[in-house]
Figure (cartoon, rainbow, N blue to C red):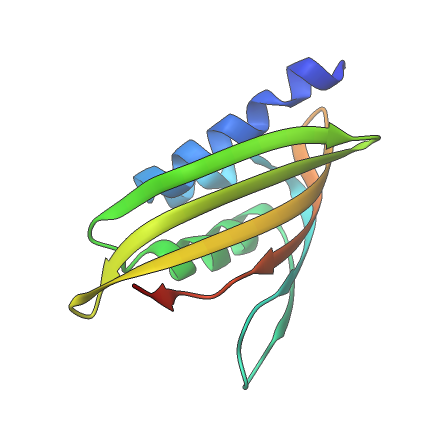
Length: 126
């Protein structure tokens, strides 16, 4: 499969996050995806999750409280054999607006994203 054909998963991932649709998000991932994340947390700054449902639920949990959740920017490009996906959202939570950005480097196969390494800015108050 060509890079351009596999890039569609980046657009779908961002659209699923923006729609806060965990089932749609799950379909972006290969069933045995390996997910690694560095997040700003004093309790658990590194996350490791395996499985499409589990990864979708983790991402969904981070963005699920935004009401509204507004896409501010997104980009994707190939860096050799890795697909870089970045997105920034404005999220209204707990009575205030926040800005959050994530950068992900993904290995993509026929069944979707097979491995994702992600780093997150955290929800920054505006």
